Image (cartoon, rainbow, N blue to C red; front, side, top):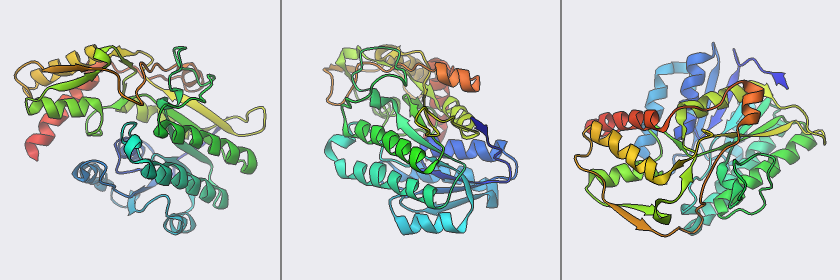
Length: 342
């Protein structure tokens, strides 16, 4: 592993108007001296774009150190212009079409962004060499694996959604480019990321929106599901650590590695709903307990996610540890402030 000093460098973050991308960009600009971040995002309307605009306005306070370019990562000429006009040292590719359920009805969006888009990024890292490419994978690659916790050593050849298949493909693409062109590539399998200013298509946000309207929330598999909920600040710390160390070469000579970033502590869906309910009641966002509708398992869903983070701990001395009650309390406080303002 080789250390990378990010000071005085130009870094590219794709998906910069997204949940993880905006928080990562903010942390980089706050903690790394004299670096510059180019943020790219095509601002799709997959969810309310006013939230994406709010995140970008949070980054505008950094002045010239942050440059935002509206572009689609699958647009080769737009992306090539960025690479050719800037000496980019580290790329963090977080741009992707997210969501497991959406992929069942809208497969084109996933092939375009997650496959063609990622291929474009790899090609440009080949032609305009970078010190490190860090990219988002997902815990969904584990599919219906029975062995827990999920380890990056496990076989992940049975995706249960197209979204998961595209993320597994990203890992395969990255390995090939790392081996062929010696591009140091690190993939990060994120586990259910949540927090303030998050994605409205995620369960905690959807539940809150419904509860505010007095509607019942749908709880799948009768609530008998487990998720390794990971707070946004922990995810960002993990990414920033990883950016600063390139992976050692594998046995086949590829500078390539994949890590899990998860809380290493799965919580039941029912506990999650009860904790969210308490936080929303405390902030007076809702005034009565949630109405719950228990339903069977949905296509593409998995029973549980549980991250083995031993590698992350060994290589970086860090693992996510924010309790769900703390993270959801911060989300509830943000939600109250944001929606009172809008």
